[in-house]
Image (tube, rainbow, N blue to C red; front, side, top):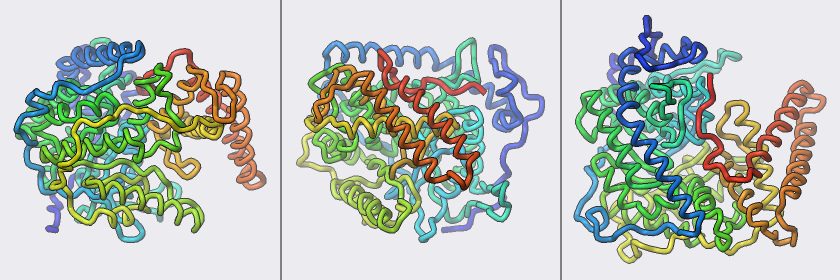
Length: 557
């Protein structure tokens, strides 16, 4: 690989002096911090206002349509395929050519964008010398959208896209981390979903879209930097539910390209197909994005959450224990193969999902966890995926070993029906163990969330917002239908409360066992935090109506 022209690697953004707040814009004094003035320039803020005013009304209309569809599903309707005779479904089209630096995506590692140490580690080689092909720097499910986290994320994108991000541990200056610009994974950025508001910037009395904020502010720093280094600017977009939402996002990308004076289709994107309705519209979504699509991704964990949420009132489709739902369930397998077939037939990459395992703390645990990852990635490669996701650098080499080719675009699954049965129809058990798992995940995740942490290593898994949402929605669904567990006990609010009390007690005992007599102050704090987390999680799990998402907005500064 040729050396990077060091003159292109500028320092991180400096504080904008005399920042002018456009008319109609409100940024509170607490939000307009020194760090915010590093992120904002007069130009970037003015363009954010223009984009909001152009796209906000359509965004609100799309969100309203989500509610209309969900009301129909709640009243017994089922999602289904669209007309097979449209240009999108039957026309002779392919996506624009995939740039060379996006044609090998065997392993992508993902994690929160706000931590410079984690960003550097994701982009760099692990202790065994392996490096992912891509690193997805995440503003979404693995990052709590506090204002400080969002601002840190934008600054880290700026540094990562230049190849000069570095960080020194303030408590131990000998621990210094920096990128090697000549040996780093490709930078990809995942923005927040269509539904999330960024409350720290209001325009004309409304909060700006979190996803629009992330996309524009990241692109403002990233696009020129990546092009200057001979790289393709590339983004992930989550939570799409309809091809018209893909059209909305494509229009936003196009406007950003125009503002930045780059050719149409310069910015590439991969959409996560992680909602039940989107799984029925894979080809239509890809068609809308054909000018800039690099591929689509099987977002398995959010898909499981969506399956439960969309069909939450359908008593005949109550979902079994979350731990038993994997890619071998027929509806999950069919959805993945449908995505592979459509993507490869249209010239796009088909990226597999996340193995959410953590390495474990003992040699035996590490061997067991590694075997699970190898089996999962081996299956994804076998059915035709071009690459996959891992949640921890330790697994990069093992995952790479399962993907023997740069890509598998020639595997078009000709014998597979493009319109398979992808409606969930779970027949497995709903168990007390499953309920306890949901509750325990709720407590563990909410403890991190309340500390502005968006992903938590917990009981051998990396739990992020998507996996928390599965536990929340599943517990609600079991309660709503008064499900009888396989032990004969019916799920009631009283039972859920009892399980929360019992599981909290176990967690507090674990804290004592780990820290008592070693760090009593930390033990006291953690016990208080977990107690609050249990109360917050229980309240979210047993609401009379299931909230669409745990959070619809960022936290105020």
